[in-house]
Image (cartoon, rainbow, N blue to C red; front, side, top):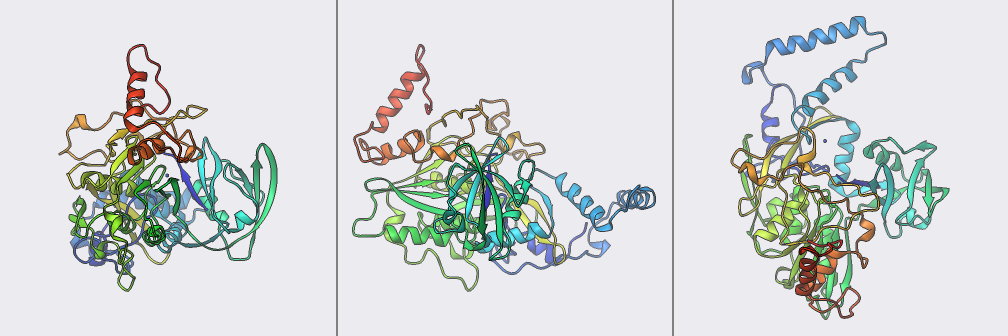
Length: 496
């Protein structure tokens, strides 16, 4: 199970310093230690405290921490656990930095490894979180959930007798997972009727790429997140499309994609761009944190792994391409959209993206914990900063308002978010009070209400709709929207 909420968290040794060049995006990080520059993958090593003479230690602050610890141990009404106390101190230290830095416990580190491999034990669903309710967004084909009859749109209410209301998304995901062969009792609300389904967990591959034809000759490729297997899954999907008549247009859908791993993002962008094309640049303070990342195997392939881009059909780098984004497209999704836009490889359609343009490094602290903190910002090939700005689409299509009119929060709305760099004009960052887009539900994707997909089809195949029937051209759609926005006109849902 992969919850996808709308919004997709002293001293150093030489080993820690080297690991700081490990670049990670969004809420599915991967430990990547680097040689030069920033992302050649090796095994991460545990960090241990360095000698005091390598980094000045604020003596008064350390003494204050120890004094508080002593007071708690002597006077707290209950039994104070040492590990919980110091884990809490680390959590507070990391949380004070920015919205995406955090202390990672053993469960968090195991989740990181799962994202790295793309393999997990569970039931085979992905969910959207809407107003605190967990709705099934997709059901993986031939998964335990599919065999048990779960369907997109079902609302999850409980697992093994525990109500899901109020539980953190990560906690719900962990309860869904377990050992192969164990049974989870899932409470489900289907079309307003409650039921309990017993589902046997199984070893699964975390499918993040789905493909179908949006119209005759137009392939629609949706990437739900950037995991360890996403590059390989995309390459397999593109090869499958390489039949007697390869598609004459591609629609890469990154809407509601919360991001993920940088190597996966590099592999995805590299499937559509020529080798050595610049994808983004990273800027930070740590040694090795400044780098220009290109379409090169050292940025998307670990030693010993196959090159997922080797042998791709030549048309993947020349076929007309559109990219769909919205306010919940974040981090790695923004990296890909920004690179394809700046390199004039794709037309970006939709609404302004989330604006998460910072890079986190994950560094283990011992065997079952670690820290994740921001080490750099990234910039598109043309130097556009994503952090708190997002990617502005070439063709703006505002999502249709949800029934409850829930508004989407972006990076700039988050408490303690990292502000744009000082080199960025202050007027360039959208203000938090600007008009916000509504939360966009995946239920509308691929339907007749999917205005962004309709615009992409009209752009790639003027006069042809999603069902192959005659449809308005892009010029016609834009003219209609302009009329709706003119004085005296009525703005329709989906108008730019």
